[in-house]
Length: 124
Image 1 (cartoon, rainbow, N blue to C red):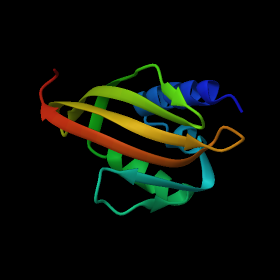
Image 2: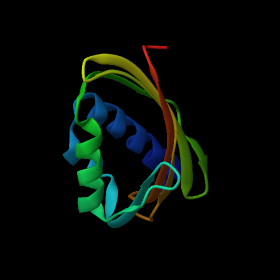
Image 3: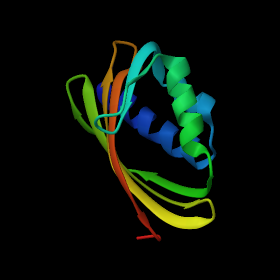
Image 4: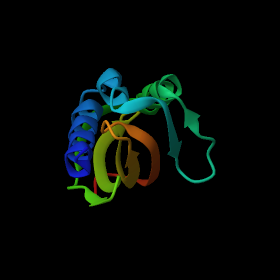
């Protein structure tokens, strides 16, 4: 497995999937038994179905997302990828900026991910 290629595919798919609210494309990046943690202290989303539920929930109320993912930073089987989103949240302009940490399996699927992100009002 080429971690750099897997990480770039992850970033590109998330960027396109988030922009178009394509949950299926995003969830296909994860192994069936993957674990995702969104923000510290939140309970983990365990398994592809739970990750899909979380992604669908996170898109609720969001319209017109303009999403960018930076080039992944890769080390071994892991990557860190920054992202930024300008969107409307219940018709209110917001900016979300964050980073996802990803560990990949031998097939290039995400087995564990953790997000750190923050939002602010307006598009900054």
